[in-house]
Amino acid sequence: MPNSSYLIGLLFSILFFFTSTFVKAQLLWEISGNNLKQKSYLFGTVHVGDERVIDYASNVYPYMDNSLTVAGELDLNFMTSILAIGYIMSPSDSTLSKLLTKEEYQEIKPYLAENIGQLAPFLDMVRPIFIMAMLQEKEQEKLTQSAHTTKENATIEKFPALDMYLQNRARKNEQKVIGLETVKEQMTALNSTPINKQARELYNYIVEKNKAKQNINVQDSLNIEIDVAVIEENDTTLVELKNSPNPMETLISLYLSENIELLHNQISGEFEKESYQSLIIRRNIVMVKRMEEQMKKELTKEDKKSKKNIIFAAVGAGHLGGEEGMVNLLKEAGYTLTPIFFNKKEKIKK
Image (cartoon, rainbow, N blue to C red; front, side):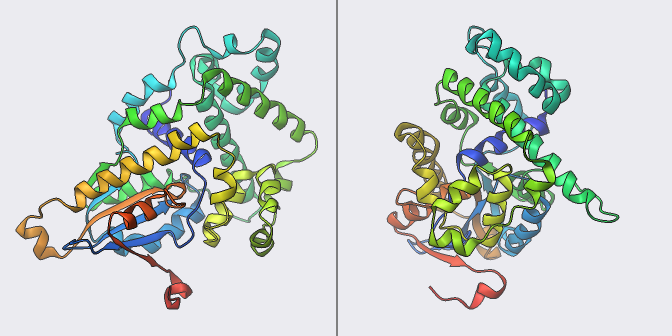
């Protein structure tokens, strides 16, 4: 079975594809008011370990490093991965080979073996939604490696998903690290999609990938240029890019460009109502409640004297936007939220 770091990374690969929606403002928000004695911060992440994303996140270090507590959706530690295993495995009567026809299962087995490698023999026992995440993660790794091979003397440095990277930094700084959700809460939300539907979506995904392989090579997908200005004028452009050979590259590019208002309405509209409630809204409510519990805690004399931020919460950017997003929920609770702009955007007033 996968090791703990791989499992934790896998959880966030899944959440990236489910929550790639963005809020109508910046990624970093200062939280004040409502009788708070010291500030807190909310940061929207993207659940990948791309070098460009890690470099971008260095903008938040002054705010994160000066916080008493750093929070993620989950506290990404060894025990988290152990607890998650039970939710990753399929029921014995609902393995992939039983959910698909014999012909369909045989059709996709070569693709799984080619892309998953040594773990492929175990995949029949894994819920399809997690197999999908493994495939998408491996696809991004291949594209990243291919990009580096086109650069002379390029070296590939592997990073954990941004959320884990930030928590690792906090631990090195001897800061308190917590999760705003429990493993059970998050895994229950992920598994809200019926398992037979997961299997069908996985099968269709692999069939489409096999078709695309006949027409498009890896280098073609790396050469996709995203015209953000055009996307802003016509959101339907995003759908075409999302169906491109490298949708994660598209989303990373949008994340780094900070055009974070582009995806919220469109992608959230693609969820079935109940799935959207389970994967986004209910989790937003829980995470805001847990943030408030931390912000309202009585501070020690030492903490008050330090003037440090109470909490720095880093969650998927998809949880920030919309009427029931975390930014708006915190505003409705009486807090003042101020966007923090990086680099040239520091002069922008809103």
